[in-house]
Image (cartoon, rainbow, N blue to C red; front, side, top):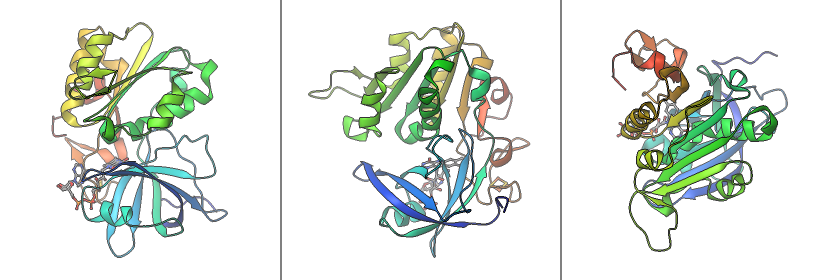
Length: 274
Ligand SMILES: Cc1cc2nc3c(=O)[nH]c(=O)nc-3n(C[C@H](O)[C@H](O)[C@H](O)COP(=O)(O)OP(=O)(O)OC[C@H]3O[C@@H](n4cnc5c(N)ncnc54)[C@H](O)[C@@H]3O)c2cc1C
Ligand code: FES
């Protein structure tokens, strides 16, 4: 049967990994579906997850479309529904509807150098691109990943990032100096200035807190990246996810339909309501 994006499907939590602990805890959930209930997605798309009796929330699909066995979601505990999800255990069932939104034009980037820049939980929407281009390593040029957390304890996908070093240049950062931390100390945009990624034949994607995105884009522009070479994703609050409720609009765009992926060339002319 074709996938009905309006219908939540029961998804079983098959694996849970605690990425970050504390009051901004992040957990990664791998969710599996009964035969015939799975669905395809593209890099950058999202799904509406429901915790029964608590509510729904839009979450990026944080696994590559090349992985068919499960969908992965990395979720920061910020409020009612995210907390309820964090309290679930392996074997529990959630609702999953989607996929929603547009996607990163990964096929069009074949042969390009990719600069992938994340902060905090903002590595999750970028991760499907990382997994996909690494799995198809020969199709792409140099891969450079910048990622920062407030402290070393806030760095998600830590072991995956270490493994990534064999396929990509990885630049990690923490906001301020820390005993034992040997990589960059300072905000992610400052690490961009320090490393000076080249705009030649390159595409940059950035996702994270809005203030980080703003300064990353400024610094990329200063390095010579054109608006068309810079992509980001918007995480406006969403309710329906399908262009009906008007909750997520930026100017005339419903981000759940037109986004969440935008090139800076498209985004810079929209009202700065994000
Ligand atoms: C396209 C998209 C992709 C997303 N991907 C992820 C992801 O991969 N991982 C992840 O952890 N989160 C992601 N989010 C954010 C996630 O949807 C919210 O954190 C979640 O809905 C909060 O639900 P809650 O009931 O726990 O919080 P609530 O109880 O509703 O709110 C708790 C606090 O968080 C604030 N808040 C709620 N929603 C948002 C939001 N969208 N943006 C900023 N602040 C918000 C509220 O104002 C409040 O201060 C994404 C959002 C969108 C729109
Ligand atoms: S979330 Fe309802 S219109 Fe976008």
